[in-house]
Length: 114
Image (cartoon, rainbow, N blue to C red):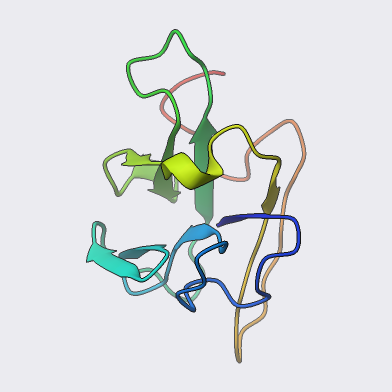
């Protein structure tokens, strides 16, 4: 997910200044809201979070989840309270191993080019 500076260390804890995220059960978490928006993912999945801040895009100011290179959620709006703030990548996990990639090339090809 994404969170602003000085937010809670736990995504999805309901903090008013907290971030937004997708969880492994397919829910989108924003403040105290938890909405089922995608399929579950687990072991050996390559998951990507796409942040669209392009004002010319029809999906501007949204987040989308991709699993193994395929879209698994419709774009979810970034809450008004977070728009215009610096947002940091944020991962909360328990009892798992993970690999992160902030490089120029995705680990699984996406269906478009940025």
